[in-house]
Length: 139
Image 1 (cartoon, rainbow, N blue to C red):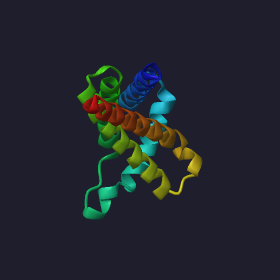
Image 2: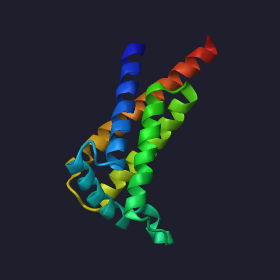
Image 3: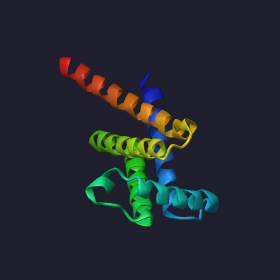
Image 4: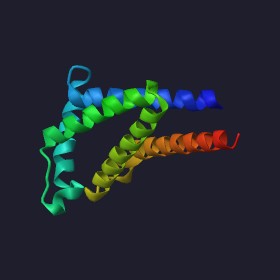
């Protein structure tokens, strides 16, 4: 079972790292990069801290999320345990923000599907990691 969770962690990490690269540059997939740029213009309009007077620049917002996804995805895949847990938390926060933005924009719920599945898998990894730590304390 540990092999399955390790494989899931590595695959999720690589998925997020690749997703981050697509946000950072248009060399891998020009269409996806352009679509994300348009999406982040909308995401900046419904940014949760907008009510407090902070609205991010859409391009900087996308670059920040891209770098966070790239680094966190890489560390989730191959980093030490502590950095995996921190990366998992950061990626969960990003996904909650994506789901929030999609729902506030009143997009079809199906647009949330990938983010919701990835969030569920990250939470599964986090719960699994906590259970292993607790089990080792009692041994």
